[in-house]
Structure formats: structure tokens, C-alpha cells
Amino acid sequence: MGRRKGGIGIAFVTGVMLVGASACGGGKSDKASGDDAKASGKPSASASPSPTKPAGPPMLLETITPQTGTTVGVAMPISVIFTNPVAAKARATVEKHMKVSASQPVAGAWHWMGDKRADWRPKTYWPSGTKVKIDADINGVSNGNGRFGVHNYTHTFNIGDDVRADVSVTGHTMKVTRNGKAVRTLSINAGSAEYPTWNGTMAVIDKQEKVHMTSCSVGISCEKGSPNYYDLTLPWDVHLTQSGTYVHYSTGDPNPGSGSARGSHGCVHLSMSDAKWFYGQVKQGDPVTITGSPRAKAPADNGYADFNLGWDQWLAGSASGEGTTATL
Image (cartoon, rainbow, N blue to C red):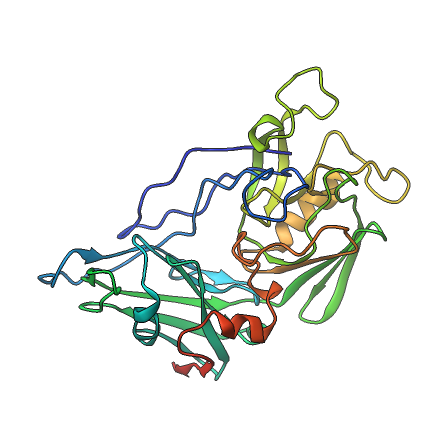
């Protein structure tokens, strides 16, 4: 299913949660754009600015995720988005001024998703119960393009229970575990052959009780008579990619499983009761891993699919390499 919404403003002092996105976008493109419409929202930031006289035009942060004070899942990266491009020559210095601390040592690294977004990810999932702090001490730091930081930013957050969902497209099942113990196995339907679901691991971006989804917004069909046309408001929506992948209930597929095998436009369908239950189990940053689809893995920057890159691939996008968190 699909939906598009207007852009979000820059957030500094108050945070704005990522809300609203295209849903169940077309399955023919392996990029975050194209047949899939990108989400409108971006991860949000809160900040405690320390005003100072800038050395030049300001280098500001548009967003920092997770929001300070939140509890997130074990696959959640720290994601920092800059308002202006950061030159390759300046990235090592910028990374060193974005210090990650934790209540227990965790190996990880920064990785640049283009020239405006940098994510810090642990080498493996975060241990549950870890307290984490990001100090973006960029006051006076150059972005290599004539801009200089004028604020320092600090976020603290916690890693909650290790909740994971493993989806088998061919088996029509979703297995949910909590802290290593099986909780439930749910019946699902995933994308059709024409609109396959992304493979790979996607950390939950956010969730909403209702989302308005239209086929036109994701380039599937704008003609009401088309068999692929839809304009629906659907409940219990867990958001996985910015291109529009959700786990949710669909009125067009009320009893998903191997018996019905209808296939979606890229989303993962659950029954009404299962969708409501799953919605209550997951939080931002919990990993949902999908296997068995003919589609490629979701690109790492399509939401928070950071763990779709192997560690060597991750380090290839880092200016300062692997490091261990400071002690919190």
C-alpha cells in the first residue's frame, strides 16, 4: 500500500518523530527512489545549543536519531544528518568529534550514506540494557566546504529488550523472539511476484495506529479501475523502509498465510489480531529480517537497514575506521 506526505522542517531544540511515509511501494526498483516513493519524514533531533560566534557559514545538524531519552531496539543505529554536504577530506575529523559512549564496551564505526548522513552502528547488535550517549561536539569544526559547527549536541538513549522478527516469504511465517526466547509464530503474506518485498534486515523506523495508503503515491496506479489501484486507511502499521515497506493489516488480505497467498504490493500482511499484537511488541530499532523474496536486500540508507551491509562494507564507508565506545 502507499502514501506520500510533504517534507519535514529542520528540528533543533524540539524533536519531531518520523511520521508518515509511502507504503508498500512498487517492487521493480532496487533503489530507495524510483518505483518506490520515499518517506516524507526523517529521523528527528533535539539539541541544547551553545551559541558562539561562527568562523564562517554555520554547519548545522538537521537531525539526530534516536531522540534523547528513548528506548530503542538492538539494531538501531545512531543516525546524524547534516544540513549541508560534508567533504570527504573533513569526515575523519567530524567523526572524531561525534563521540559515542556506552555503559559497556561496544565495537562499532561510522559510515557515510552520501555526504549529508553519517550512521554509527555496532559491529553486531547492541547488548540489551546498554545505556548510550552521543556527544556531537562540532562547535568550530569544519565541514570541508567553508562551513563550521556552531553548536554542540548531546543525546542519550537506552537499548531495550532484544525483540526480533524473522519473516519467511516462502514459508508464509513470521517468528517473533524476545531476549532469545520464542514468543509467537504468525501467518503472513509478503509481496507478489510483480511487487516483491525487500529482503534483508530492516530496523523499525516507527509505527502508527493508522496510515492512509494509496497506490498512486508510490507510482503503482492512479486509475481507479485498475486492479492494482487502492486508496485505504489501514491499521497497526509498523514502518520498515522509507520507500514504503510496512508490516500491517490489509483489508484486501484479511487472512494471510499459505492458504490465501494473495501477495501484497511489497508489505508484509498480518491478520487483524496478529497485526495489533505485533504492533504492541515492537519499538523503533527492533530488527525485522526478511528472507525468501526474489528481491535484493534493502539499501542501507532506505530507512535503517544498516545491517544489510557486511562489516567490511561498512568500514569501507568510514573515514576513521572501527573503534570501541568510550565508557559511560
